Length: 295
Ligand SMILES: [Cu+2]
Image (tube, rainbow, N blue to C red; front, side, top):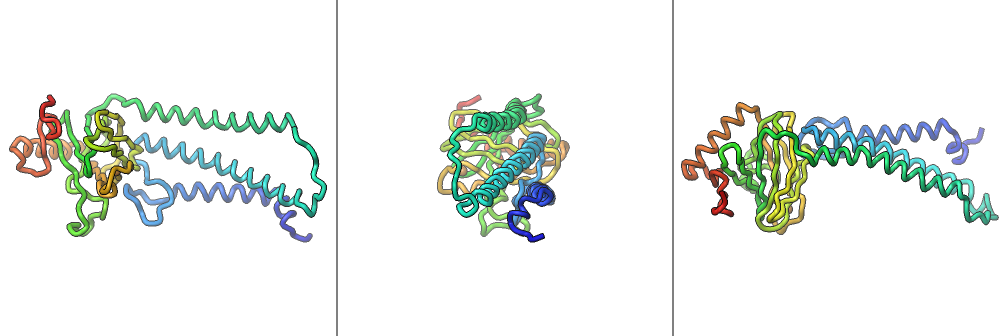
């Protein structure tokens, strides 16, 4: 048997193998990456999920990857079929068919059904992300040009400023463009309401492994929620172009045990009350410097 491109492509086993291979390759690229909460060199997939929201985002992403892989392979197959079967040499006299109602209905209805199939889990996830469940605590994130501040209204009302560590002050082990002087500290396995606002221009608070991305808009209080399931350091970045130092306002989140968190919060509150013994604590009882008349 002479193997031509046509005979190889016409072989059903070959086509099935190709489809399965490409789909598996896509799935393998998404999984199989070591657990880490920061960008990795040559990373292809997403950072590993650390919250129930991100678990669901990743699951939906993987489902969609299978669907788009199958559609892409199907369209590629049709194109190759047309190229091989109906090229000028093999098919010199084209047909004059201009309408085929059955085919036209099918190529309208089937894509609509596929979109409905995608919309159902997509909307479900959107509402799951949107509605904050019974929250154990609240943190308020404020975006500034160009740093973040984190307030703990129900932990004593103190607020900390979180600034990037400049390249020339990095200590061994600290990550360039990611580590900050005062990370956001939160307890593990705790449902946290995250309120996000801004003081100057629009920023965006984005931590990939939490599945949280919320715009920091002046005069608005946006809301998200997270429940981080593993202790550790997590990194994110402002992802709304906000000005010249947009690339230099990273987000570091330190997730600790509830006991360690209580201890940290008590110390932070005490230094706030002692009138700035710690430079990190800039305000008490929710009275941030930007709005001294609040409360
Ligand atoms: Cu920015």
